[in-house]
Length: 234
Image (cartoon, rainbow, N blue to C red; front, side):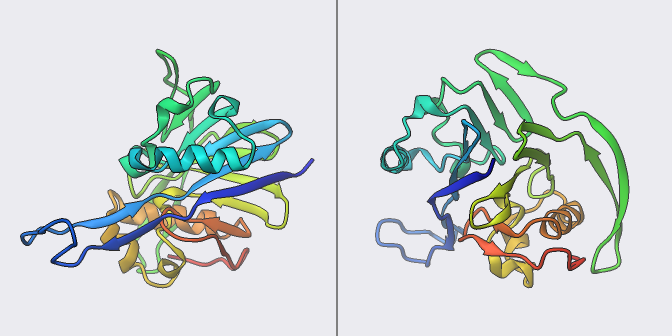
């Protein structure tokens, strides 16, 4: 059977001007940002990917209600990493079987310490001709259409979820900040400025995801179409 995605909100990340309506920045660098959030349904499995920030709580509940979803209906909560604009509403979803917060996996007070087992590595040469060793990990399958993949780089805990057989879209990757927005496909300064704990590893994982899906929902921008199987390098 097919799967379905509903984008709850499209994330954004915009540098603030020196003088904001409510704040004086005093030379510090600030950004207005919240993460993309997506509901996924497949064979009775209901997954929420990322939860935005705590100030979006009411918006999140309202958008779910418009899809006839109550927070208690969520089967699994999957968050790309632990930055607050992606995990601000975890406690709405205490009925979920598991929370996947990056590579931290837990339910109530029980942590799964070996959910993402290492299974090897491969060498990747970036567009800048830098070679790096990319660890490979066991994927976690929530059902036959939904799989979770460690994709470190932006942070070393980052994960993405690949949604297969998706109505209208084919194969979709929900990636958090592996990609900031579509424009960073050809302008890496965008995602580098947003922060990367390991830029070459992020380049490798961007290439891996980009080349095997039809669409990507980035952390801070709308869904965009890839050039699947183009062997694109970053």
